[in-house]
Image (cartoon, rainbow, N blue to C red; front, side, top):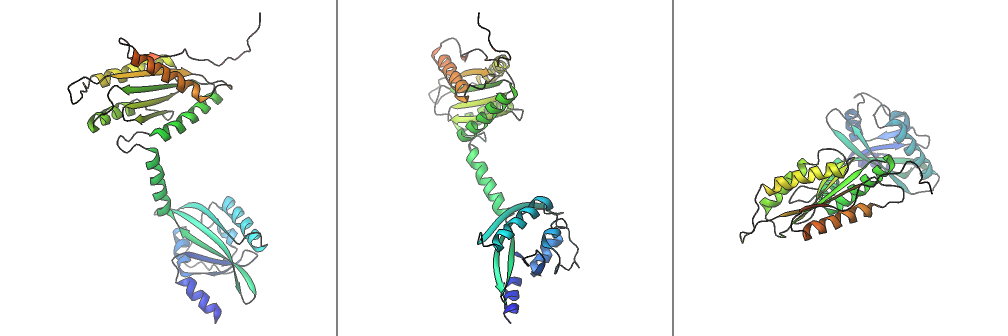
Length: 304
């Protein structure tokens, strides 16, 4: 009687339920499990009872080797009393769409026999919502450019990659001399910066309302200066004006480096900040680079 009650409850759930014995053989599957298994490539008339769950992972295209091994290890720990439950997440592709499964395992006892109940839930909508929220935390909503947080993360990773590959990395920071840019002006500047971030190793970012940055991987100061000249000319050609009718000008600081093992990412960032301050202080020069390109030394320096 109790078995029928349990089965009735499990059949009424939207989750995909599989109950397995301690050897991994399937003792029970609820009705919705058949729907999931069909989406994952199994045939309609497949009788799951008595089949080994871990062996069935290949039928269900559930990344059989990695998932089956991990799940089997978690089930063993559960049966040994080392944990009260476990959760594994994994992706699976179907003909119609992608599924993101969250598999939770727990112990159930029926007629003095222990079983492991595996509850499979499709959390793709939750994952999509989380990814969208994460994306929003890395993007400046007004411009669509990377925000301050995303800039620093990308810049640090590109610096580390350049250090490993002994390649150059350049950095450009531009600042408009008017702090209250309107939405049209900001959007136009963002569009220009986006056009100059063409490669995977490039990133255009907004650091403040009137300050923009460009990370350029695998190029030196000469190439970065060419990009800076293009940005300067394109923004100058827009003839931005304040509400009082004064021209809005742009100042740009640039620098590049080939990081050595003893260099930190702050070195280049500080160099560009100094270059930007020099450009802002100069009446004639609106583009400035602070220090020469630092090149990795392949051979140790010899003392005289």
